[in-house]
Length: 81
Image (cartoon, rainbow, N blue to C red; front, top):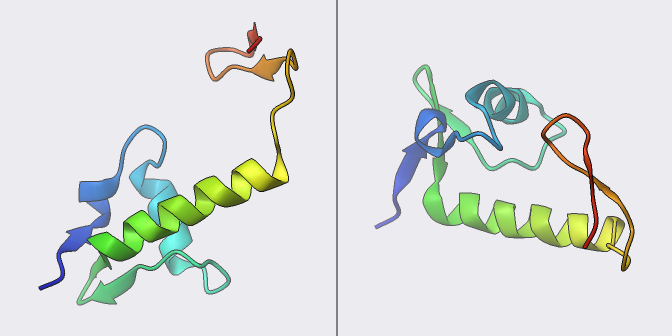
């Protein structure tokens, strides 16, 4: 049996619920959510596959180079690998 999760259950600092709702409602998005009544839900397995795909796409589209500065989330400090 597949496990259904609400957007609230999968929301976190990286994906706030407002972002998840926007992805769910966007017809051009590949986010695997669908509505049951008034709630957006996603199968847990589909969500994890979507996360893996996002991770792969980000690794391919923006590979990190050695000693390349990376902008940090905390105010734009520069980090080095």
